[in-house]
Image (cartoon, rainbow, N blue to C red; front, side, top):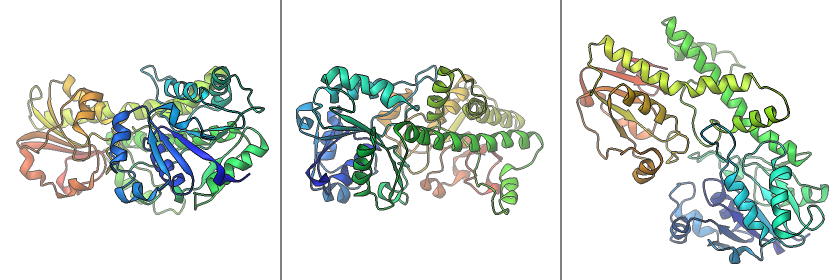
Length: 420
């Protein structure tokens, strides 16, 4: 099969889809499809608001076009789905974007086409949820008229070192022959190479456990921080001492949010419960991590009380709202848990973040970012370790007897009152 004869449609142009579309668009006729006209408009102007691809990178993809209409992707022969897979308010998988994108593709699906999914899902989702939608909408038969692949995304938002082409890619296909086609397709753009998994389910499971593992490791050190706080021991000092052993894993306590680590474990536990197994370790880790935002807020309030501060209507500054440092992504940011808990105490909270889009924050969380730092704060909480915060003069922002709390071990220990 001559891959260069293939036309590729990338469905979803977010943090995952855009870098993929740009790489494929350097060698293959590629259409980046997104339902957000504003997103397509900015990309056509050479601007990526997610900051994953710079203007030069967008320009280098000479075979890439953008579209919001299905007509533009009807002659594609390979479709790659990169839409979000969030959870709902009950922490259950929300497959709406995946189902809608599968339904859209089914309207243009033709004999011989391949649909590859990159979105994080539970094992079996491609064949159990997506394939029936593709069959119903197209009238075609799976593994006879059309085929599927699964190649989990491994994008790390904001990371300019471990970029798409430099991370080994897991691939899979619904038949041995299609698995080889999918593998060769990705191998043509991924310089780090590929790993061909035994089946779609294996590839799906591999993706979801990557983030479960990180979640559990962070939950472990978060629990250690809770224990060491009661023992009046500095957690980071303990971790640095233990880290002198060659095989000790260098995880740090913190707020676990974002579109992956704080979400993906619920996809696996959902499927586990569906087949009759009650997961314990994974959900225990989730409970610990989900509770850290409220813990930080309560700890700060206690420190304020210890210093004689009046809590109600006191001014508190939170530094950072994105889910991680040096990245504009606010999806599932656990910083909001700190904010909500503080406001429940009657605290007046200012949130400052030079990376976040103020309109997006207002839409997503209903709060207004401050454009400039003020002063006379009764407490300052470092919630995200943006590099810009290195230049902040904490003393100029503090009121008398102010509390400084560091969730990221970012500031010098002598300049803070406490940290996780």
